[in-house]
Length: 115
Image 1 (cartoon, rainbow, N blue to C red):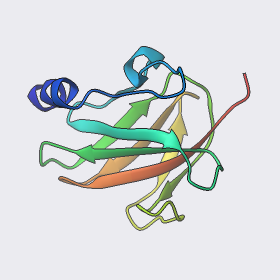
Image 2 (cartoon, rainbow, N blue to C red; image 1 turned 30 degrees about the vertical axis):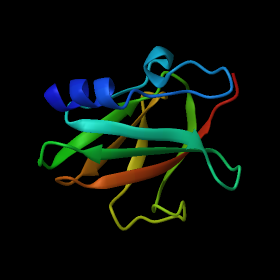
Image 3 (cartoon, helix red, strand yellow; image 1 turned 180 degrees about the vertical axis):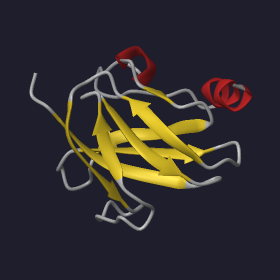
Image 4 (cartoon, rainbow, N blue to C red; image 1 turned 120 degrees about the vertical axis):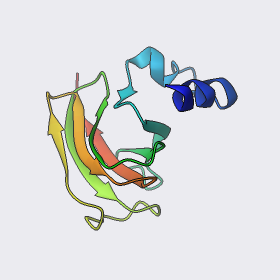
């Protein structure tokens, strides 16, 4: 938990336009996987979530989003569809699961279900 605690202290997540910080929305990740950013997609089509693996391990990871996910796709850093890093799937309606390699950055485009 050292990386996560240090990151939270040095670079706390910030929300804009009156939204609550991600941790208050119930967003959490697998230990060793750090949520780098969560934002509206540049083209306005969904939301972008970016994570990286901080401990040098290969693992099956998850992001719990606290909101119902309607669709998810892996994208590259320029937000273009890309399955080069492997598949991503919706699990338990409000979380996504994927494989991540040591120190890898993964980026996903999400669409949330209407509530």
